[in-house]
Image 1: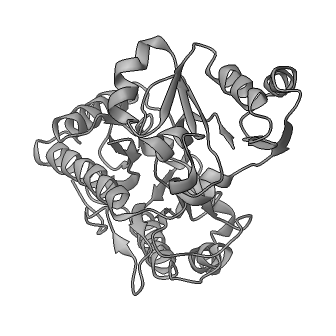
Image 2: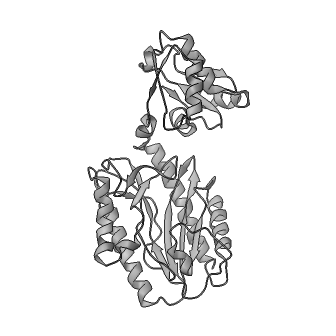
Image 3: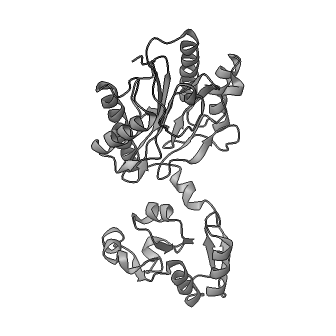
Length: 346
């Protein structure tokens, strides 16, 4: 198997550089006899020695081509070579075919991603630390009065990201979403110079990156006394989110987990205002398998890290999303994001 996606290489080897390829031989480790080979360029020779000490290293800027040449030179060993067809471009496949004409190239999409579906305890600990950094950042933002009328969405987003760095994050998981007032009805609004105002919903979707693993959390607060419609929508989303969380049980179809939350919102008459899936997998990528949606496939398995994030969005008025990161366990899911989901009134 020729692994070319850098996140998959990181998962398999621990290497964190920006150029690498990995040729994995499908033999027992004891019988491998050095046939699994790692390649990177000269910039990372020292780093590779520290992070991937157990494998043979090749040093070449054209890492993928170099490993294709290795496969071609050992066609007796590498008769069939899988490649990550979900990542390799058409031109890249043409180059592989020219470089290794004596090897049968076989499409092998998603093999490493399937391994990544189930997190081990070290991965879960990194996710837990990332979630804790985000929890603490929001707590400090609120404690110091960072959510108040007159501040801009951009200022709040920058402060959240700064606080996450202060609490151990290497960076944000993604571009932080802060949306105030009518902007909170836009599911993926990008922060602007819009000012927070009394009576606004303020929706914040953000996460921290720790040891390569991402957290993801959304909380919606209200500035000043909430209107009746705001309480109604918030309570509806909170109820739907609890139903979605409770449905993340071993053996549950991902579609059914989405349905559990969606039915709550639909029965209240707001089904058309819940415009996305219940959630998604999270790990080395902020969005990875499984997809908890009506188009998702598969079942919940122990060790899957997923989000539960239903929302209701009323154009021109405002919207609510509540999101947690959870890990599927044998009994009940483990909640990694611990900030209260009660309506916070500031």
